Amino acid sequence: MSRTDSDLLAEIATAQGTPTYVYSARSLEAATLRWVEAAGDAERIFFAAKANTNLAVLRRLCGTGIGIEVATAGERARAERAGFPADRILLGGVPKSADVVVQGMGSGLGLVVLQAGHEVDAAVSAADPAHPTRIGVRVRPGIRAGAHPSLETGRTDAKFGFEPADVADIWSRLAATGGLEPEVLAVHLGSGIDSLEPWDRALDVLLELADGLAASGVPVREFDLGGGLGVDYSSDVDPDPAALIHGVDRRLLGTGLCSRFEPGRSIMARAGLLLTRVLYRREREGTPALVCDAGFTDFARFALYGAQHRIEAVAGSPAGPPTVDVLGPTCESGDVIGTGRSLHDVQPGDLLVVRDVGAYGFVMASNYNSRPRPAEVMLENGDFRVVRERETLEDLWRGEPTT
Ligand code: LLP
Image 1 (cartoon, rainbow, N blue to C red):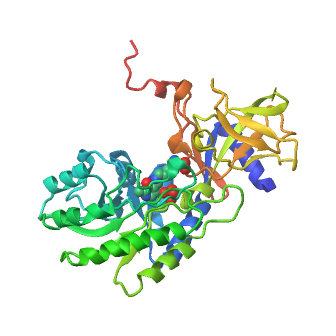
Image 2: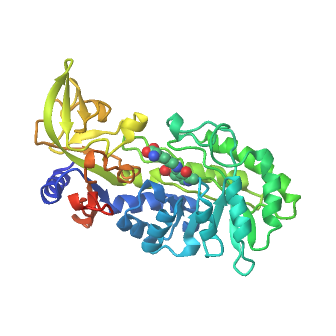
Image 3: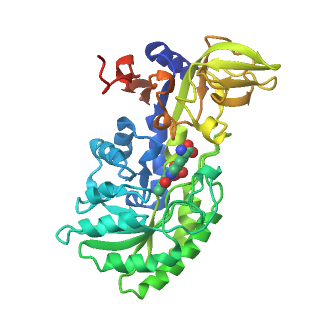
């Protein structure tokens, strides 16, 4: 961390308190540009809003010309609020209520991906021939990929999408319904994938399906290959969307099929860090630990997936052992931010940063223990701006009768 970075982070901590999420506009735009350049066209890229829904983040992403994948009415509302036009919004192939599907019909969305029987029923019943809707069908290809079992979504036993064998019937039903235009086969294999091989295997499944569907008279036009590209949380090496996209393009050459992608983590992870202050040190069976003011309520990825993010002292981390664990302040032993870090000289009151938390950081924060959720700030042009105020105590009981 350079001296100026440390000064700015210290200034943010003083002005806004801790824990605070800090995003870099430049970094999120650079990561987006890597996807756009590799794809040759911003219209092939749809940011997975679930990774980060802060309006200032979404506005920046919108400005790059890419689209957005939303999973819920809330994500859709945020995307619209941030300025994404309907035709750049993709209603994603994740479990949705019938209501969300119905609201998607005829409303000008770029694509609606269906992934369960009740979603198909809802689309068919709400289809409007005067306002046709482009439809995708999510396939469960039976592939294991992802950084953790909870993050594998294409396995045969996953809850998402249709078995390949069921797709032809669904496709025919959609094709026979006025106002529905089935055009896309979709997959999302998992999250945190560190090899390109799973996409290759998914393409085998999708290409075979597309071949079969050609006979239905309503050909598949495009594959939506989801998100999932991993980020190496232990280094500064950026994810490389070019290898993925170019590999897919090569396989689709001559087929007339296009492809699109829904990256979340690989766009936002590196663009965010969590700033936290050490409350005190303690020995746990001989292993020193730092208890800090960010807990698993603010950043859940270690508690949920054992994810080890780099944690550094703002003033500079001493290298080498002895190592310490970094713990949160809540009333559970599972409240851990990371383990085995070279932070042995860090003292109470010092500032730490948890790196690469721009994706699936703030969005998974909770109010457990009635802890107000952190502030979010954006670094822009060498300065910072608050893009979400820290929650207040009043926010905690909003909507509850107070007498
Ligand atoms: N498209 C669909 C349909 C998805 O379900 C997801 C993520 C994405 C795209 C974006 O995937 P990405 O490029 O970010 O890997 N909370 C977890 C991540 C869950 C991701 C769920 N779906 C974590 O903190 O690792």
